[in-house]
Image (tube, rainbow, N blue to C red):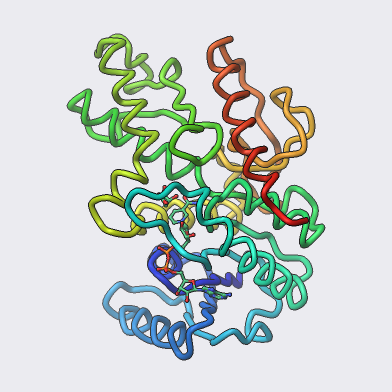
Length: 308
Ligand SMILES: NC(=O)c1ccc[n+]([C@@H]2O[C@H](COP(=O)([O-])OP(=O)(O)OC[C@H]3O[C@@H](n4cnc5c(N)ncnc54)[C@H](O)[C@@H]3O)[C@@H](O)[C@H]2O)c1
Ligand SMILES: O=C(O)C[C@H](O)C(=O)O
């Protein structure tokens, strides 16, 4: 299993590290446009192999895509992150050009690749990768919901005073400060609806804190987060590489599902060796449907800024 990670910055390197530590891939190739940067990150990570006990071979390349040839999975993290006070949508001007160029380069050398898009604004960048590569829709996956759901579980665990491992919950919709739809109605603590333990008011606060999870960290760090994003990407890569058939909310091209079409937005999907093997349509309440519809309108507005 060969995995390419384009962008050896904060998220790309974190993602490569988690993939290596989980020890399921034979090879990870890091690519960056900055001279020797990916090579340096790869060497640093390889020097953790004996310490962390993994056999994955990590190499780096300065923009030489021949080194990525035959990749099974590629992750696109190249692009600029936001600074405090910015929205993800404001990154489109620079990141669209980068994502377009990177995805074209990837498919030249790996025509069968499955691409996971991370660069922001992620739902729109995922749509752009469809338009650029023409890959089948199951092979293009946007990562946002897996991270947002992890943040939802973190906030739920805080509110419940319970470990995150005892909590389950999912966030669908666009990966934006206003577009996320945390499904509070379906969140559980060890199978028991969380509404049995906390008030509606507290639950609404959990949902609001989840939606601004990325912005909150950006304010604290001066740039956006990388540990949880890297871990979330590694989970998607592992589900595909190991044919796990796990459900994650991912950004995918919709064609009538949830009453939406011609956009990529986060909904639950089954991930396995064929990438997105199924889009799972769950019964949403009228309020949840309305929020998803509103979120989709936001994503479509951002898509409208693309020069296709
Ligand atoms: N979808 C998500 O959930 C999520 C989570 C975190 C970050 N992000 C996004 O991921 C992106 C990367 O964030 P980061 O914190 O790693 O940023 P970063 O600045 O640390 O790293 C980005 C890297 O991309 C490289 N790069 C730029 N242009 C390139 C090109 N044409 N080819 C190859 N490499 C190129 C840069 O040299 C840099 O090393 C941002 O757009 C950020 O908003 C998304
Ligand atoms: O918040 C950001 O800009 C980065 C990323 O989308 C995140 O949610 O951490």
